Amino acid sequence: MSYKNHPLVIAAMESIDVAKSLSALDEVRVQYLGKKGELKTLQAVLKSLSDDEKVEFGKMLNGVKQEIQEFLRHKKALIEAYELVGPDIKAIDVTLPGVRALPGHRHPLMATMDEVKSILVGLGFRYDDYPEVESEFYNFDALNTPDWHPARDMHDSFYTTKGNVLRTHTSAFQTRAMKNFGPPPLRAMTSGRCYRRDEIDASHFPIFHQLDVIAIDENISFADLKWVLYQLASGLFGDDVQLRFRPSYFPFTTPSAEVDVMFNGKWLEILGAGMIRPEVLQAGGVDSEKWQGFAFGLGIDRMAMIRHGISDIRLMYENEEAFLRQF
Ligand code: DAH
Image 1: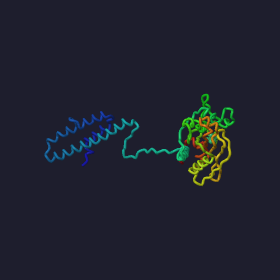
Image 2 (image 1 turned 90 degrees about the vertical axis):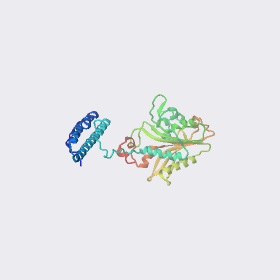
Image 3 (image 1 turned 180 degrees about the horizontal axis):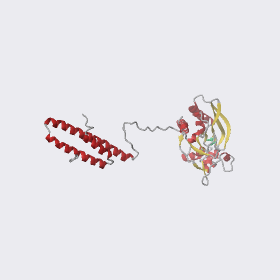
Image 4 (image 1 turned 30 degrees about the vertical axis):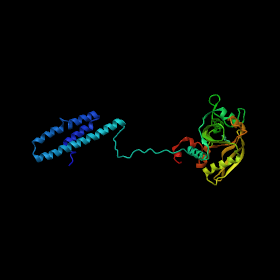
């Protein structure tokens, strides 16, 4: 039998309802269940009852006590939760499903960068980060591009304090790495943000990402460069990938090439490459009579756009959820 509708339970419930603090709630408990409480008063009636009646009455007292205790417990939990969560709480229903935080996922740029990196790590290249605010020396001079050199004009740059520049390409790491790691053999790479004062359009943005690689050893040739590039390209685009090497010019490599990949029936330029010039080796403290090496640098934004069929570079920097969810 339930005692929920017993007048004493209903009266206690009404007091419990209005109690707004733990101390107010305790007053209600004392009033009903305390040593001189309502229930004790009722208990006094027991003495005057017959044995049979006593059993029934005793059950009732117990039932009423349990109901009141139950309401007190429930309200106590609510007040405690309220104190924890604050005034916005309506009620806590622990059986409701929780609010699920959806796990995020990688930006297409970072995913592409990591994939390129991991293929190259597999080929024995070490990875390190290098400064984004670079000295003009490492960004230009050390790469055989002194301040009068016309090639500087192609890199419309953001100069910061005197002698420093936001790196215009990750190639700036080349002579730093040579100095950091001492005498060759050396296989190293870096990647990250680069900056140029480009007009913004579908294929240009003042921030973009590159990945640069160098390999220096005693007998490194252009054939080694080609082999590494084919390994990289087939890892990214599949075994039947086709590459095209076009002769080109960079101040820091001779001979130099621009490399295109055949994608959806079209040649797309993906990177610049070449054999490191002796001036660059010397700027990095490497004996250019003894050692030689190759270098290449690729645009990660370009690569991500090709792989995912993205037509506008700006989409990758707007962080619109509708765009990002697709990858
Ligand atoms: N740094 C060049 C650029 O931003 C790309 C490049 C060309 C990197 C040739 C290289 C290289 O390492 O050997 O246009």
